[in-house]
Amino acid sequence: MPLISIITVNFNQPQVTCALLDSIRQQDYRNVEVFVVDNGSEDNPEALFRTQYPDVHFIRSEHNLGFAGGNNLALEHTKGDYLFFINNDAELTTGCLARLVSLFDQRPLLGLASPMICYYPEEGQAEDLIQYAGMTPMHALTGRNRTIGQGELERGQYRGPVPTAFAHGAAMMIPRRVLETVGPMSENFFLYYEELDWGERIRAKGFEIWVEPQARVYHKESLTVSQLGPLKTYYLNRNRVLFMRRHNRGWRLGLFYVFLFGVAVPKNGLQYILRGETANLQAYWRGIWWNFKKDRNGSIKFQHKGHEV
Image (cartoon, rainbow, N blue to C red):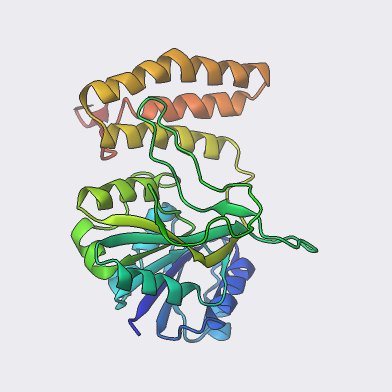
């Protein structure tokens, strides 16, 4: 059984993270090492995790490094043949890890794989509600894509593993050899689009991305950011433009800019104004404008005497 390094990031949600760790303990796949990265929580939960989960490796960052930064902080400590990144607000079902490893055994060019992700069931809920069963490619004009299966009741309509455009950041597995070839997730995004950018880079190196519906994870869906409002607005829109800049050139990028400023910006701006959402409007503009101050790697484009221009 290959060693799997499981990495999760905690941010002010120690009890939620404990539920994930309990689900990992219940896996029939035992050859794992588990890393919890605390991403600058207000209260350091180290004592809790070391007491209740002495076999878990705890890493503390004094500052919030973002989604990619928090996950990447654990990489140098891992030894696994595979690395499994999972949100702390998710829980594994029995056989999830074994089915993902089996898929990699069957497909030598597989570079990244996600399980099917379902919304965490509410009390009395009889059927699973799907959040993710794959993704479509990014549309060259709009810079948007679609999540396959989202909102559908799970009734066996997604049976076997299939290729997909992107893995889902809530749960994804990568072989170490692929990680060493492609490199880790980019930390320029901080929040949102990291796994989509990673997927494009992985595919550019000749690897495949698949989803395995027979492996399943339950996701409590954005406990961290659901109430953040303008912060979510800022990063979603900033990073959508950044993603398109990083993976498009020439006329394709020009076409996206025509849509962005001819359709998306006027439409979204008007909606925020009509709804009286001043904070979201400001966050939206800051997100768009950020891309004209920074290059594709997040560095300042121009400087004069040490000051940003």
